[in-house]
Length: 281
Image (tube, rainbow, N blue to C red; front, side, top):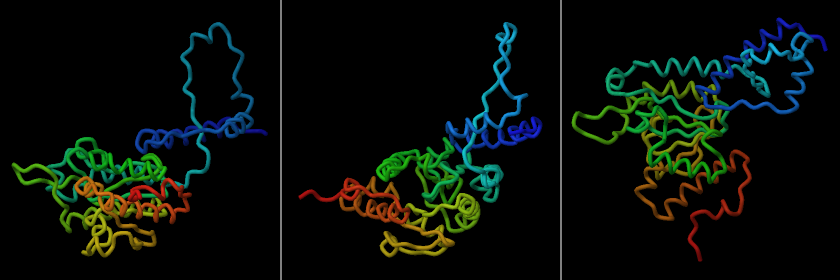
């Protein structure tokens, strides 16, 4: 197979920024299979073959190894990177801009089939710039693990990208206001459009109302499939609710919702998973 060395170099140079974006900003680890590496080696023109090493070559600075991505980029990585820069510099809510430490963009796989949506960053998330890392986030990670996913497999985001400001002298976290959610929701909408999840899980009533744009009750919507612009939406309790209500019955409700999610995604469900949080005879 003949190849143009200049064209090949241009292809590598075009790939490198995408790889850097994935590893640094989207926290992915591109992998190359043996078949991909062998095909790449076979496509190299003679000028790219490794020359015979000489004594002088041993003292030269080693050249970096460029990883290879399997599959084709559909353009979403570059678009997500542009969107991320816009989100991180957003000033649409001056009062939140004045009080925030940093914007919490979201975290996970840009090709995720499953997307979790919370309401807003808390104090810890505001400091770290990552959603769901406090006690509620640790519980969410356990739920994700019980579903046989990792946080790197899915995507996690919030309705609000900034922590709601607190009145002077008060601590804790407050619920986002409807106007704040309406202002910030277009950012999440664009993320969803680019990530293209097959299922969205709304964690808590505020997240449900933020996505739907209308008031509702958790009693009416929890465990029932709703629709968000063509994407199946499953409302369930926020992990913080389970920290306050640690009964087996409440944990089972959330887990039954996750079983419905796994079923919708076509994931195998083991007998062990079916039996989580059931009363023992």
